Length: 346
Ligand code: NAD
Ligand code: ZN
Image (cartoon, rainbow, N blue to C red; front, side, top):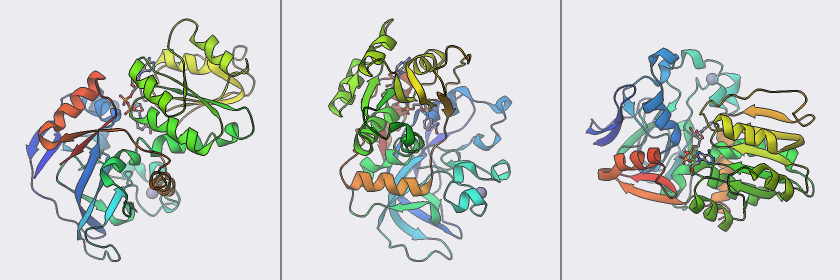
């Protein structure tokens, strides 16, 4: 079968032919419906190497950690799944039996250091291929919902959803506001989730005017970058600042904008993995404003994301690519030329 393979550190992936996999005990073979291209993959093949201690991400394997598909074959011991039924894949794969994995939070597996990989498509074969093998416990049923547009939900939907849920205490009550910085794959769905599950005013910003137009169409008030950006954001909040900020870029300037915009007792969540540094200071930080990072989400939250999708409350904007053009999806993602989440449909 054809697959997009990450073959070497600091090397753009290749489109090659590999054997069709077979499911082991407790696993399921899926015929892939869609595989989203996440900006984290660009970090994996472009920025990381062995010197960074990322041994679980070492090549080679098939990329794609936002996957959906139809059950094709059941491995030994797997029962209760119908051949041909559509599922979304929960990407993180922990040990499966520690306290974190038992509550569906494989991202914070207690045995992460000795697990062979992090997730489907992150250290073991992912979904940018015709077929994908995943543990049966990682499947979330899609019912009759479109599995192709659903694929990005497993990361571009779940990661913002988890961050927003952790900030809900800041968004409850009247007159609350949220700020979304970076309106790509994750940021656009963040705007939709905030609109769907909170009453907050959603403020959004990106360097690209078309990304801001899309966010505005989903209910956000947009503010362009520039020297008076923070002043404009503060004005939109009646001078108070923003109750919950989500930074989907994570470079030093966006972290500074996030911290300059936050309200007293507000919360800033850095989602983008660019590693921007920020010098925290007692006197310039609004009282009790929190600054945190985040990583993906739980399988239980993915069920909630799927429920919002099935109810028509969130709809990923997708740009589809056939297998022949799969590498073009990553090229466009890296170049910032996408309009909507790139999904490879093999
Ligand atoms: P993307 O490429 O689809 O979107 C990034 C967006 O940010 C683009 O619209 C771009 O125009 C905008 N942008 C870039 N620089 C900007 C700036 N200075 N100011 C305003 N906007 C700017 O990326 P994505 O797939 O949505 O991922 C976003 C980030 O989240 C990446 O760093 C990715 O690695 C990270 N991520 C983190 C997690 C996690 O668990 N923490 C999970 C998935 C992705
Ligand atoms: Zn575990």
